[in-house]
Image 1 (cartoon, rainbow, N blue to C red):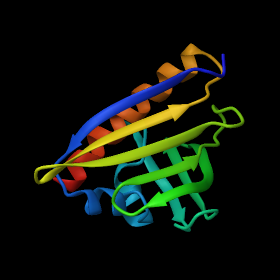
Image 2 (cartoon, helix red, strand yellow):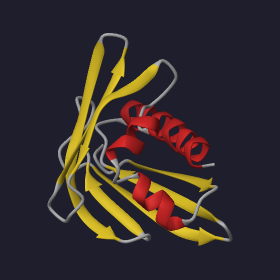
Image 3 (cartoon, rainbow, N blue to C red):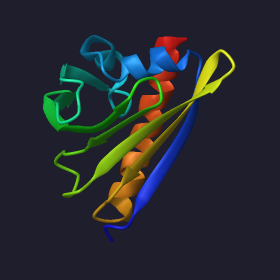
Length: 140
């Protein structure tokens, strides 16, 4: 069922440049890039250029969940696209972030494609929703 995808929209109370930059700054990513309560980011690194890599290690207690990938598209303050590799993803999984100005805020649309099954998609949707909610709090 690799054709499964998800989309999450969130209004973030910050300008597109601030929201865009948050996704590329490892120190800021550590503050929001975890999928739920009881989790944290123990390590984050970015090389924000087309073909550059990123790494995020989400931690839950003593369990580390590594995520990594490559930047496919970087359009300043407008779009970021990257591959998504983790213990719960399949080959060809990608995430696209679109940043649309909305007054003094940003409408962020996150689209994640290619999941092994509906359970994996639904788990990721819950995780991304939590991440975007936390991002909105961090940037408020």
